[in-house]
Length: 386
Ligand SMILES: Cc1cc2nc3c(=O)[nH]c(=O)nc-3n(C[C@H](O)[C@H](O)[C@H](O)COP(=O)(O)OP(=O)(O)OC[C@H]3O[C@@H](n4cnc5c(N)ncnc54)[C@H](O)[C@@H]3O)c2cc1C
Image (cartoon, rainbow, N blue to C red):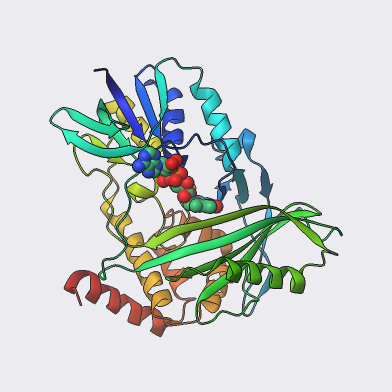
């Protein structure tokens, strides 16, 4: 039986990114096996994220659209948000899969198999993966297939769920220079509900209806909200739906384990790369994977060593989730207060790159009582267990 240096279980966003970073590192000649049940050749998702102007990532050449200006429609403010040094970017899944797969094809030491994984287990000297009736072994297994358990009452287990349409309109009605990242002008139903509109050109845009709560809607309900928004706020002159996208992202403060065993490393959403308070995962996964590959190249071990003080961001995420879950304050107003003050600082905060002083300044813009009550509720729930 062949033993690989690395098995990558799940060749989606995190798995393929890891393989890509390995090919760009001193570890490029290691033997790698990528297992996924899908071929990954369709546009099954679109990733949006912000990035510093001076820090373009490896996928810059395949960025589908990017915007210097983003706009926001909240309770007391509607208009542009100063992005400062950031740009908002959109990467289509299909372009990412193709780009990485083309790179991987150049490497004879990288194998890919389309197969369903049944089990991943640690062994005394590595890890093994059982898939399609075969057993594969490696020094390290990187797992992006592990499913987070979202039913422990100790945690806040919300979902970010959304349906989007790529529409082409009869009349030019979009400004391709501006992306609307949150528009709260829809009935909130006591939840957090908003639309975003990401224009490709004057007549084409991705219009997406998004909710943060614990209840998925029916397909008709997503469609009806999208239809209502387009009819009410966009002067389309009629439109055609060219593509649809549906997704559910966990917004949970469940404790994740990046290293469940010495030679098994979880990556992507499985490894805790999804930010609980926003659902954004793409950039955090890239950051974590770059650290993992750097560590392996320098020390032969992949483990990341996050600073203990960084854990405060997990507490902030839990407090925010508690405010949402317990409906302590209208979410549209929370987001308005967050964004209008200093949007650049907010992007840095969400990237967990701020200092304590920045964070305190941001917190002073929040309604103090709902957030204080949420803070104590989180302490009770997480540490005292009530
Ligand atoms: C529609 C959608 C849009 C999103 N948009 C954004 C966004 O704009 N910005 C952002 O930051 N995040 C976004 N996310 C969240 C996150 O970035 C994505 O979910 C991302 O794909 C997560 O990467 P991953 O590698 O952890 O999981 P995936 O990309 O889902 O990869 C996991 C892979 O494992 C495979 N797999 C799972 N189980 C098995 C098994 N038993 N056997 C074999 N293969 C298996 C799957 O086929 C899949 O290819 C979005 C998510 C969705 C669903």
